[in-house]
Image 1 (cartoon, rainbow, N blue to C red):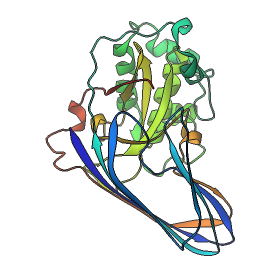
Image 2: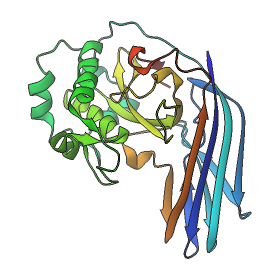
Image 3: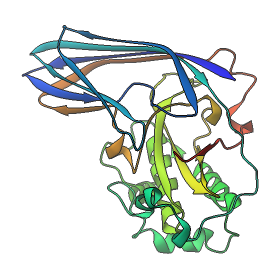
Length: 279
């Protein structure tokens, strides 16, 4: 069992009164338990909280006046590692649960319909199951260059496949897209995790539905899956943006500090997938 201490500081220069919707709090999810948390917003404004019961994603909304807005989230979280068997089968489409069916569909950043031929050529000949998703994860890790600043907020999985470079969310989008193109439900998971090489930032991985459970995969292999504190789960990045902004603002500061103790004994490349039973 691991614990994580999280400090997230976001500062914005607000040019005109603006509405914000944030998704930075640890999600309600069986993979962890929040021991303590604290949210502070400066200047003092009314904050409205709500939760998406289907995903467990937690949001808060506020109206910010002109000037500097500062948002600070602190939490201490206990993580529950649930290892899964190494032989998991893919589900036939007819057996995919109703609440997982939408994760088979193309979405804004994951054009699984367009990528179908490529997915079949690369992975269609492999035996269905956990090993095939692991092959997708390994192919992305070996074929896509991790290059901060190369992609942007509109980059899609197809573009990453062509350009062969991107950041963690691009790696995750491509994994999701290739899985969906093979009729494997897949979705994006974003959260907090400590990296050996700073700067710290929100981290994106993907999750595939196998043998009645969701299993995490990280093609970047930047951090152990069992250390991830889940914040958002969704079809792609549109569902799990840490901030959705309705107005004219400029981010002037983003600082994340994630303390997970001694992580050197758990190198990312040696981790096993983390399985979580679907809610």
